[in-house]
Amino acid sequence: MSRDNSEGVDSTTTKKEGGDDDEEHKVKVGDEVHTLSMHDVLCGRGSGPNDHPGNVNFRKLIISRKAEYLSTTARAEKARIAQEIVEHVQQDLDPRGRFLKKTGPAELNEKKYEPGQDVWVIVDQDTALEKAKQALRQNRDKPLVEEQLRQKKAEAEKADEEVQKQV
Image: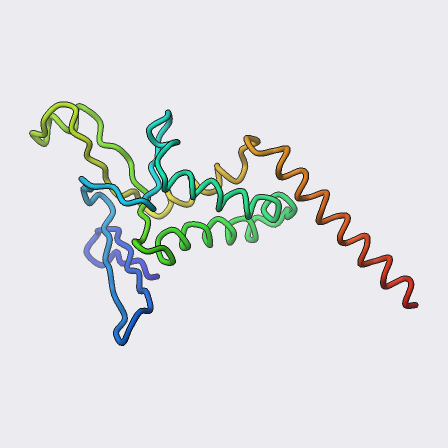
């Protein structure tokens, strides 16, 4: 993935291996989206974004990496985990996911859209990363993550015991 600011426009280029040719897809921050895909991650609160299939899958991905995230104190490692999650959504899914923010009523009116029409815009990479980091920090899945951490600790202790037996 590369970022291109040569024209003062924040954009992301992603490549996906497939068939004989590489497929290139350029997504620009601020591009309007009128049709959501099943892998899009919607920024915002409430049941709309929470119930969207892309957000449900995003939360599952977050849960799968949360114990790893919480077990490190290194900021660079935490940033790497969040980056890998964002890249997975944007590059590894078919169709690729996008991080989107709903356009507000005032902006819809300014752009001459009908009231109530759903228009989403692609957010910048920093906003997508912040969404991932915030989700990783949330205590929403604390019991599940605590159980994962207990299991990892027990596995490590068992491995230590095995090493001690061999000595």
